[in-house]
Length: 315
Ligand code: HEC
Ligand code: HEC
Image (cartoon, rainbow, N blue to C red; front, top):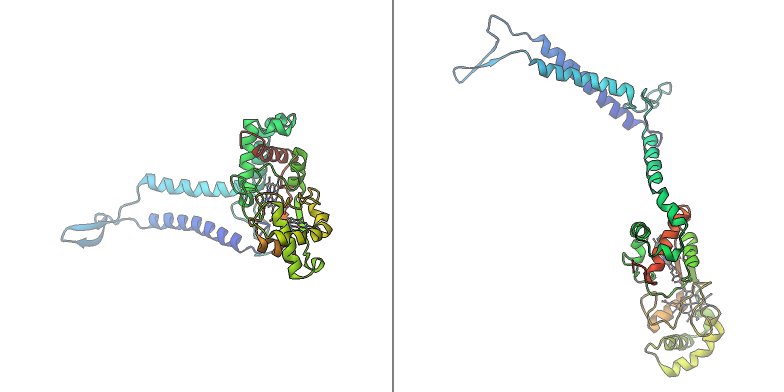
C-alpha cells in the first residue's frame, strides 16, 4: 500500500470488509429475534389466494452454521493476513495492518521469482559454456531466444526479424554495425545511435545535391541520371565518403549505411529519399538493453539474431 499517495482505497476496502462482517452478524441476530408465535401456528398472518399462508419458521440449522463459519473464517483470515490495509490516512498513530502470519505480496512475488530463476539456472549454466554459434543451433536456447525476441524486439524488427521502414532487417547477413557474434552482443547491450547530420550546407545548391543523389543511386545500380551522377562523384568523395567510405559501402564503426546495397534500410531508394537525407539528416536509435537483460540473456538473443542469417534453426 506504500505505493499509493492516499489511503482512500485502503479505508474504502477496510470499510466494506468490516461492514460486511458486521452486517452478517446483525442479520444472524435479527433472524434469531423473530420467534414464530405458537398462537398463530408459526404463521405471519399473511394469506394469499385463499389458503396460501406465509410462515415464519426459524432458519435451518445448517444455514445458520454456515453463516457462523463464514464470519469466524473472515475474522481469523483478517488476523493472519494483511486484509485491512493502512489506516495512516485516518490517523497517523494508526499503522498498517500486517497480519500475524507475516505474509506479504512482495515476499511472495520474490519467492516466485527466485523459484523461477532456480529452475532456469541449470539451463543458463549450460548456455554459458557454449559459443554464440553453438547456441544458435541449440533448440532450448532458441526457444528462449524466440520468446525474448517476440516480447522485446518484434515490435520494431517484426516477428520474422525482417524489420520494416526505418527498422533494419536482421536476416540479410548485411550489417550496419557488424555481424560478428561479439558485435551483435555489443549492439544489443549498449544500443546504437546512427547519426547522419544534414549535409545540404556543405554540398551547396539544390543542383549539387541532385547530382550527388544521382551518384549515390548509381552505386546500387538503381535508376539514375548518368550525366548528373558523373557530376556528383566529386562532392560525394569529398564529403559523404568521410562516413560512407570512398566506395559507398559504409562504415560499421559509425553505423553509416552501405549505399551500394540493393535494398535500403529506410525503405526507399530514389532521388527524393537521398535528397531528404542530405537536407534533413537522420538519427536512428536502437535502444540499449543492459540492465533489462542479464548478460546470459543477451548472449542467447545475439545467438538468435546471428542464426537468422547464418543457418541457425531459427532462420
Ligand atoms: C557524419 C557521417 C555521415 C556523413 C558525412 C554522411 N552520412 Fe549518410 N548516413 C550516415 C549514417 C550514420 C547513416 C545511418 C543513419 C541511421 O539510420 O541511423 C546514414 C544514412 C544515409 C542514407 C540512408 C540510406 C538508407 O538505408 O536509407 C543515405 C541515402 C545517405 N546517408 C546519404 C548520404 C550522402 C549523399 C551524404 C553526403 C552528402 C552523406 N550521407 C553523408 C552518416 C553520414
Ligand atoms: C524501439 C525500436 C527497437 C527495438 C525495441 C529494438 N530495436 Fe534493434 N534496432 C532499432 C533501430 C532503429 C536500429 C537501427 C539503428 C541505426 O543504426 O540507425 C536497430 C538496430 C539493431 C541491430 C543492428 C543491425 C545492424 O545492421 O547492425 C541489431 C542486431 C538489433 N537492432 C537487434 C535488436 C534486438 C535483439 C532487440 C530486442 C532485444 C532489438 N533490436 C530491439 C530499433 C529497435
